[in-house]
Length: 100
Image (tube, rainbow, N blue to C red; front, side):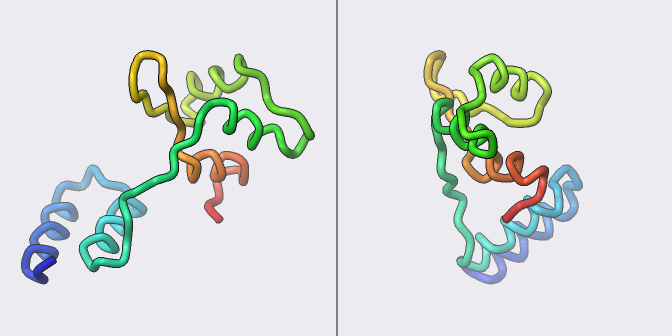
């Protein structure tokens, strides 16, 4: 990406004000050619298994739905029946809000 284009994008993003610092930093890395917008999406069963690891058994489906309702985790709907979750967001929830 041309430096002038990258600077224009970052200037507009900074002026917008609706972006979090993490989102702005990710955008800056992408503009510099070092970041990636790809994220690993995992299904509900994998999420339930990951979140249940400390106890040795998966959390229940109603518990996962409650986490979604409470805003602890954001579902990504691919269709009306296909729901996936961002693996980094699940790991962050598992680490009590801290990213690895």
